[in-house]
Length: 281
Image (cartoon, rainbow, N blue to C red):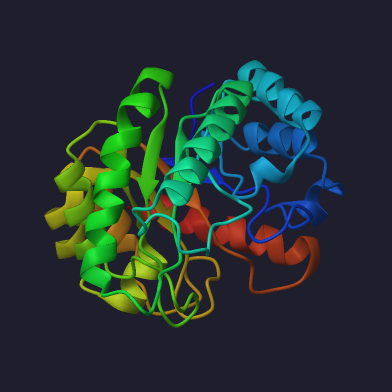
């Protein structure tokens, strides 16, 4: 079945908790397989599940089987869900490196269980250490682990997050994330371009897309302010997504947002808004 979608959109099945999938009310269930089937019926290309690592192995296996059955791509999940805001990637000590390696081993197992590739890679920062030193340590840590990721067929997705909503993180600006990715120089280390975070911190989305495009692995979208569906805020998603499409982007565009209105009606309104944007780009 040909999809109506002009980009490979991928709704989430858990943004900030396991019980907040994109279509909770429309499906009438938070069961991830029920969500996957509904998303597939809508013609989407894949899913995102930030907190996949917190699901049981049995549930992950069910999801992997459902994704394969419905021919959907598994998008991003947080590779270290239990320590995502701890100052780990910017450290050079043996304990941190051991933890990072152990987290990657677990994440690879989960990724293989669901047929996924992209591990969202974020970290807190140590305010007692200059941030440039921590960025350099992150580069060195990534260089150590990139060959393992490459052999396993997974990608470490470096995502800059906005300082207003996620204070104290190690990477807030897209330029810093881009520099880290380029310094590591591995196909298994790529940039997660989250339009919401980039807009808050840096703006100039279209030119910033162009400047970082060679490092981008995954694109995520939500409107600013409030991380809600496109059309609720200041970002001109018709122009941004049209530009992305014209560039020939073939990766997932993950719908990493909440919805502005409650209930099934709110979910369907958000879906209608995306459809209207899609029809225009």
